[in-house]
Length: 144
View 1: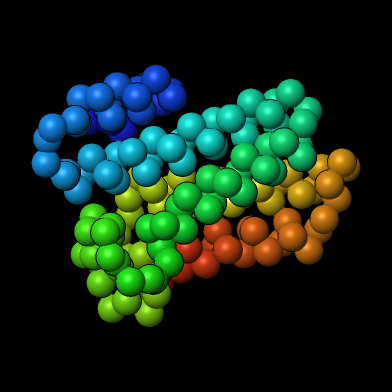
View 2: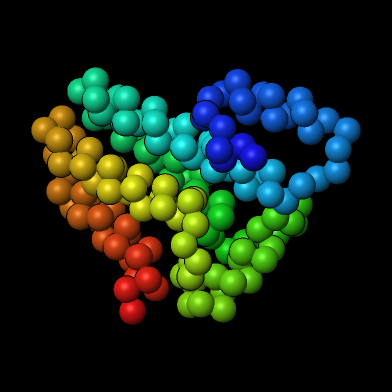
C-alpha cells in the first residue's frame, strides 16, 4: 500500500495515524522501511543534482543504514517482520536471494554513493570502489 504511494514525510504521518488502534502488520512495517529508504535516496539525488555531493553522500549513507535493518543479522526481539527474512538470508550464506524493491534500492543507493565519492569535492576513490563492490556483491546470487 505505502510502497505504491508518492514518497513523502506526510505519507509516513498518514500511515502512522491510520494504523492507530490496529494490530501490528508485518507488511506495513516493510512498507515504512522501504518508504523511508526511498525518501532518503530521493533527497540524495536532489542534493547531487544541486552539486552538493557531500550532502548527497550523507543522505545516501543514512539510507544504507536504514537498509541494513533488513540485511544484518541480530536477535529479532520486537521486530517480528524481520524474522522470516533473516532466516532466508541465514540459509543463503548471508545473501538476499529474492529480488525485491528494497534490495534494488540498496544497490542503486550504493552506486550513487560510489559516484559521490568520485566527485572532486570528496575524491575518495577507495571508498567509491568499496561502495561499487558492495553493490556488485549484493547482485552475486542473481548472477550465479
